[in-house]
Image 1: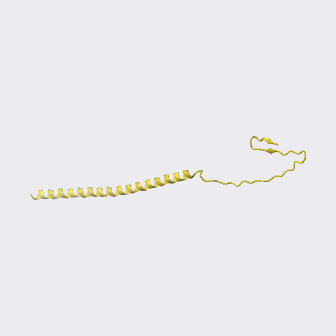
Image 2: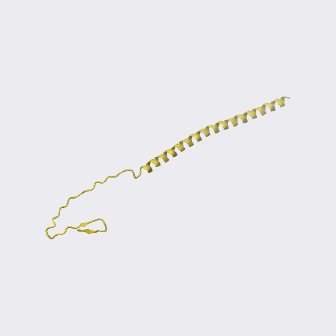
Image 3: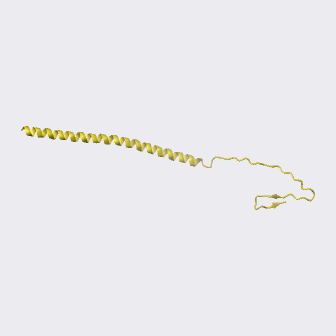
Length: 97
């Protein structure tokens, strides 16, 4: 009878150890899942921020107006009586008199 009681107590101790180990594993898994969830949220937010920045930058290309100052010159030529003034235009170097 005493032997049966001792075996029952040993079985109960083993069962409690199994339960505590299983609960410990579950709590560790729960903590790890929370960490992974936070990491996934951070990665997704960084990904969306990157895509948003790229859309902003690529949308902005070509909209900036670059103004270049052009220089103008006034040229006075005296062709004289028989002289000829020529103007060379940008189209196939045509000469206009």
